[in-house]
Structures are given as structure tokens and as C-alpha cells.
Amino acid sequence: MPKLQPTDVSFLTSAPKRFSETFQIARPAEQVWAELIGDDPLGWCRGLSITWTSSRPFGVGTTRDAKVLGGAITVHEKFIVWEEGHRKTFVVEQANLPLFNRLAEDYVVEGDGPDRCRFTWTVAIEPSALGTPGGPVNAALFKSFFADTRKHFGAA
View (cartoon, helix red, strand yellow):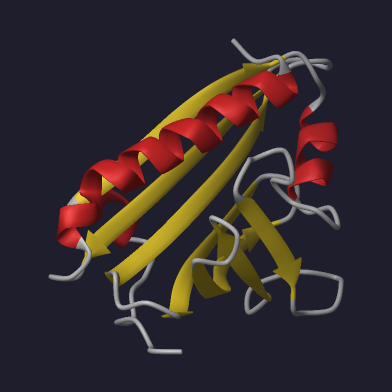
């Protein structure tokens, strides 16, 4: 698989394309975090399949593979931030198609009382020349993932 350009956490705010959603969830933060690091993370998102390629316990350096749209797009991810129970951030190191120069995602879970939390999911993308025309497809894809997440958690 072709390698993407290296990036760091600053890319989350400087990327040319960003998608972000915050979900107000009537569940404890620990429960939401457990689903995000479970054996089928984001399994509720249609068209997305994720497999951990590192052993537990997870932390900085953990890797996983994701297949999007039935494997039409396959990426290898590496976590560069891991704050157990609160935040995890990965960068895409490799992708089967040269659609992106850089791609990163950030997940933040914050308690908002004993039985409530906020989950913020941010996606940062720098498309390649080949991937730039696919901007509307990316927007629709992440809008769908965010809608599936809202439905799964019954989020406001």
C-alpha cells in the first residue's frame, strides 16, 4: 500500500478539509470509551470495518486496519495520542488508493455527570490531486458515519 505523508496532532486544526461532530450521550463516559476501543470499534457505522492489528493494552503506537465501502478503500492507521478513557488520535500511514496526502482522526470522550458524556469525533484530510474531486463523497461518507453514531448512541 502507498504511504501517506507523515503528520502530527496539529494537522487536526490545520487540515484543508475537516469534518467534526459532537454528540451529547446519555451514557457514562466509561461505557462510550469501552465501545470505541472494543473488538468492533465503530461497528455501527455502515460501510466501515475496523480490525485491531496490535495487542492490548492499547496506547501510543497501536495500529489497526480499516476497510471503507466494502474494502474499496483500505487504510492502515497508527495512534499518535492515547489518553486512556478520554482521547485517542490516529494518522493514516498507508492507503490502498492514492486519494489522500494526509488523514487523521481524533476521538474525545468527556464526562458530563455520572450518566452523561460528550463524544467529539474530528476527521482531518488533505486530499491528493486524485482525491480532490472526491470531496463530496468524503463529506457524504462522514455525514453517514456521524448519523449512524448519533443513532447508535441515541445522541442529541
